[in-house]
Amino acid sequence: MHVPAFAPMGLYHLAVHCGEATQVSLKSVQVIDRFKPAHSFIHISDLHVSRQWQGSAAQGYAKELELLDRFIHVANIISPDFILITGDNIHHYTRFNADSTGWGGEKVYAADQPPLVEEKYRNLFEGAAGLAGLHALEVPFFLTTGNHDFYGVAPTDHMAKARQWNAFCGLRAYGFSYDGTRVVVSDDYLGDPKTDIPDQRPMSGLQGQTLKNFFKESGTGCLRIMAQHRPDRIDTAFIDQYKINILLNGHRHDPATEWVGATPTLSTRPGTVCRSGESGRWEKTLGFFRVFYLNKDSFTFTPPLRFCQNPTAPVQELKLNLTLDFCRPNDGSSRQNKGLLVNNLGVDLPHCRIRFIMKKGTYTIDRGCIEQVMHTDNATIVDVRVPVKANGRETVAIVGTE
Image (cartoon, rainbow, N blue to C red; front, side, top):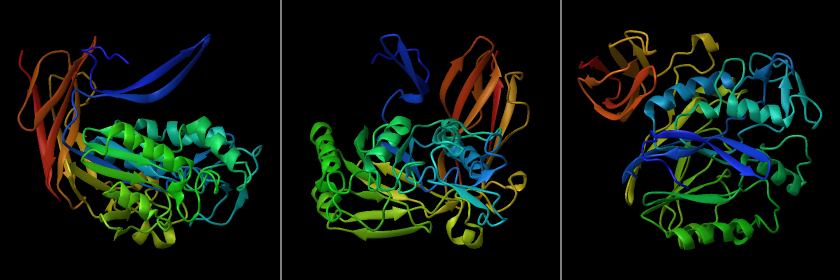
């Protein structure tokens, strides 16, 4: 693949032409100017988008989008290098007319009962009713499978479940590299339990061979991350052999960490970021994510961070724990502006991003560093990185120099 030298950093659609057909994969190619030895990622899990449906099957939307939309605002300010999502992305049934706790009502399971599987994934990726889905993230994200990630097929029909995932999400087992970091992703629920995921040693099957081939071709790098859904079935022989440093998982909705194996390996889950039905125990489970900071062969990570103050509040009343506001409209109409970041997450954030959209011209800032400048026909876009202390605020002023 050839990337023009003038292409701005960011996510791009990928168009694949085969004969007379064209398949477009949205926001699937990330252009960067260089790999950074010190980089970061966010870990979230258990979105369960479409578990609860708001409104009618035809005109409604997944209730979970109300929280996911707000989390995406926070994630785009933190702006890590990538995001890992460890399963239960959608839900294998849909609940209508739920009570105020997200329970009760009626559940539908059948393939021909709307919202169909296509609509479930459309909500997950594209959002609905003015609420954002995952494609609103401004950094790459990578999914693992979970036990709820299918709809309208029998739980025991592993081929049908795998085929459905492949149609909407692509590979179930794969790896990728970022500088010296190696990430491998496994499927511990959808595939065949004999050939894909043997119960006692899940990496001894076909997917394990896929991940071993990735390490053989890409090398083991400086630091290794494995992402799966289950926290209670760890192939310690595999993680010890490949010296996995971080094992990300989900499934259970309370945050947890433990050290396993001989390397040793950090096994961790963040809690759930937006699952409906958690209001009865939300203080222990809901609205959480973690940030990991990597530097060659070392890493640090945050405690579970809640992106808003009370995730059970009505969507119009959600108060985010990380906000960005502008003094003037950030729409290309001004020659000067200020961006105000307020960080109530309780941890330092070293690389927050502010995107200024200004009148076309040249600009300078009073703090932080300019990451890139892009010129369109009608505007100049300036991306700024700035650190914000825990429970602190930072103001960045931008002004034209002409």
